[in-house]
Image (cartoon, rainbow, N blue to C red):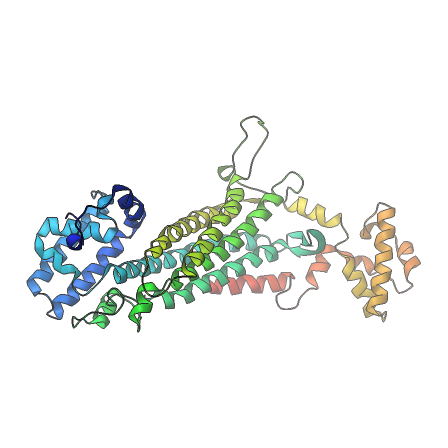
Amino acid sequence: MSKLWGGRFTKETNKLVEEFTASISFDQKLAKEDIAGSLAHVQMLGECGIIPAEDAEKIKAGLLEIKTMVDNNEVEFLVEDEDIHMNIEKLLIEKIGPVGGKLHTGRSRNDQVATDMHLYLRTKTTELIKLLEDVQGSLLVQAKENINTLIPGYTHLQRAQPVSFAHHLMAYFWMFERDKERLIDSLKRVNWLPLGSGALAGTTFPINRERVAEILGFETIYPNSMDAVSDRDFILEFLSIGSIIMTHISRLSEELVIWSSQEFQFVELDDSFCTGSSIMPQKKNPDVPELLRGKTGRTYGNLIGLLTVLKGLPLAYNKDLQEDKEGMFDTVETLEGSLMLLAPMIETMTVNKEIMRKAINNDFSNATDIADYLVRKGLPFRDAHEVIGKIVLYAIQQQKFLLDLSFEEYQEFSSLFEEDIYEVLAPEHVVAVRNSFGGTSPEQVLKQIQLGEGKLGK
């Protein structure tokens, strides 16, 4: 039989079965991790005397040669060899002869593939943390330039109160900071070593799992072999975190789409991040944030897909678990592409400060400050709220805004109004007086930016 496991079988695998069950089309992404795990495993086998030292060295040399071939894209992975493990092992045997078959002593593909994915996610999680920091850095660049730029703040997508544009941007900085912290925390569970668990029950060989963990840089070893080969919680956690990250990217993208529209014109995205229309020459479409928003669904689907795969699996390993990889790879690639585009798009966008300011002047987002004004003069808040509601209704009927009303008009609603009402209603004052920690005053926003810079070590 051509299969490395073919001793038990009397017939060749049906071609359709071979193609249907093979995973090499996608798990070849794990080639470097698979070789790294094998190098650590064979070093341990040699050190423990489980295989002769000279055999271990020969296997290591063969694996390193295959690694060079993989790095240079010189390996043709074959469907008939099923997966990345069998492809590499068969290549090894072809290169160094039967001694290559000793590599698989004391392990199974079950603990081998789990180790590969732990190694892969550890690397990718670390890289994604850096990409998140790049996005945070771009938000800081824009925030520092727009501390005193005012924009309407919204609730229910209705203008609520004016805020610093920097304050608005920093809200996303902290979303991404939490995402980063989740990824950092997840590394504690990614950094568990399954190798040495065998197919499900451990091995009869006197292996040294602690030595393999040391070589590969794992902090923890799975204490239960059945859990080790069937655990995919670390992938679920990553897919969950990835979905949350994409949620935040999507929310920011939605704002960029709205802000760059003709109706808002708060920002203009750089031409290098937009496209045109095949029929309407005047169009400048925010395709990048639209796609970022749309790709969020992929990451949700990958999470739900793996949850569904796992929900009914008995212990220990089952072939269903082959379905854990494609979604993981897709989410990694979606996050990488999204974050690499988001950072420069934010940093290069133009902020239309005058248009933002005009929007602030033409709304009633300073109404709350009139209520606070009357409360400070002794009027109960509920009574003040009613007075301001009537003032806003009157202003709408007169096609005016609050700063357009005369002092006499204000006094018709309450004798508590004095000339200083116009200072209170000035947008800069409305923003400046919200000086509580985490508020939108320039002083607090500056503190927030400095706190953010501290998070990035700047």
